[in-house]
Length: 244
Image 1 (tube, rainbow, N blue to C red):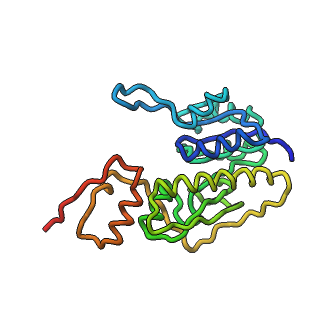
Image 2 (cartoon, rainbow, N blue to C red):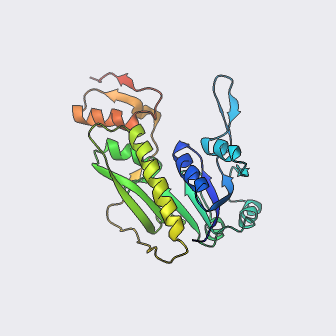
Image 3 (cartoon, rainbow, N blue to C red):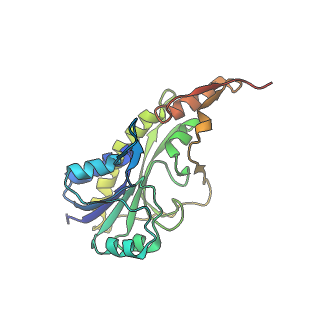
């Protein structure tokens, strides 16, 4: 197996699981891209992202540009001379010069079975909608939102009691294993891209704070899914009195 030069692009805890798996593999992560540090905590001090922290602990260069549309940033990325970029919940749009710079392009791990639940909150939306199965998919990134060809995927069942936090953790583990297998196969020519069908496209819009309110007039099963879907991802779930 050929060891590949990789740039990793990710930000939250979900991304960390994949990054750690890559660091244990035969491949070399030469640079990490992550969202810029944000102010957090009582002191509102700047806090690096979970991915940023792990990369720093492993003495890997971390870059935190606010945008990748700048030509100078694109040239810096191309100068890394990488085989592939691995993108997991990064949070920035990748323009075409970034997508095409690596020899094998950019691979994205997405927490749904595409084309269902494209977008920002696939884990929460799957539970809230009452889906009984979801999964992870790895796609060859294109310019559209989660529109690229799927290279690999694996299903994960959603139980009646599973919370978004529990599903998040399971998908991260399954996704990390799938990504390692996919990267290992990049040089073998055994990956067969599957174009996403036009039917079945849904969008997982970002969770709005207002959705944390409970409307008690809704059916019990729907309320249960709503609460499980927001579990761990909202600071609290508040009551909203039924309007007359």
